[in-house]
Length: 200
Image 1 (cartoon, one colour):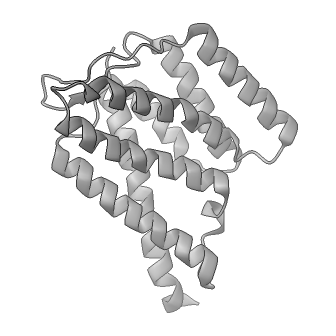
Image 2 (cartoon, rainbow, N blue to C red):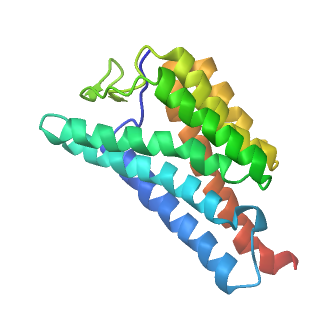
């Protein structure tokens, strides 16, 4: 099983810039205006969402470095960010004991069965990026998805349930589709923020 990301460099770049702007806008409103989205206003959430945006930035770098020595280095950075994302998600849990137990279980999961080898990222048959990790590791991926969505689901972010469904329903396209789901959230937040003055 292999996992594909964005369609081309321009889509990756536009998504990275657009989502970065909307997350910055959300942070600005949460810090300096009365129009806030409280469910987003925590360090754990900002880290999780920022890491997802950063993956689009790495996509751009990979498109530009498919045929040189930086390919694997960028892939290693991508794998590192993906491995941190469940930690960011679990940090959303306010119950300290539960949060720490799940974090320890996740670290054990990664060390015990994680396939951390990074190969070169290439274009697949659909001309999308085929990341050089998480290959032939469906059991590890299942654990990664569980720990990724556990924290957000615990605090009521039901949309994260769609992440797991997308990854397993569409296999090689699921990871890419789930990231589009995250980026659509930023647009939703922007609509909320711009709409607050109209109905408050």
